[in-house]
Image 1 (cartoon, rainbow, N blue to C red):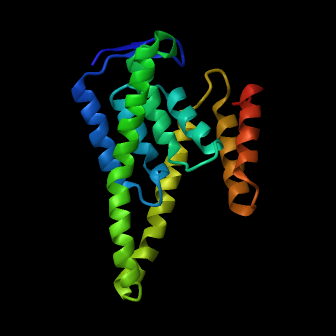
Image 2 (image 1 turned 90 degrees about the vertical axis):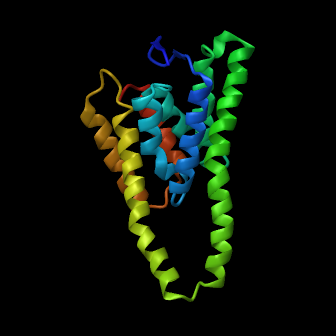
Length: 209
């Protein structure tokens, strides 16, 4: 695969059919690891899409997560946005015409089918079994033991998003201060997350982060 970087947010990449299969297989695997939701697998998505293959840049990756979290609907939509951006990059960008839009739809379908198919099937079967056996000690122990795993995965996700979205000229401590304050607010209050997303967008527009 050949990679060309354009501007800070624009990219143009070339993907062959093996790359598309690799993208699909990666999301099939991540689907089985998405404990407590696809958001917990964001660190490995970043490793695969940004660091390993260069199909997205940090700005596109972080924006996909932020936009999907702000939009109504399930938060798994960020996976669709990542696939859409990969397809657009493979087609030469939004301005490249209808072929880029078709590749964007291909990327969207590839990532969404990959992330949904295994987990949906497994969840359906496991939920039926777990409900029938909910009184067993092993089932109760498994549910309690998964709690720290989920917390750790969410912390890893926050770390990837915070370190990968640093503005070039803004001091790094601004970003970490905002991250810490936001985490404290989420932990100690019931303030709706949309207010926090809006505040973050405003601070970004003002050049704070």
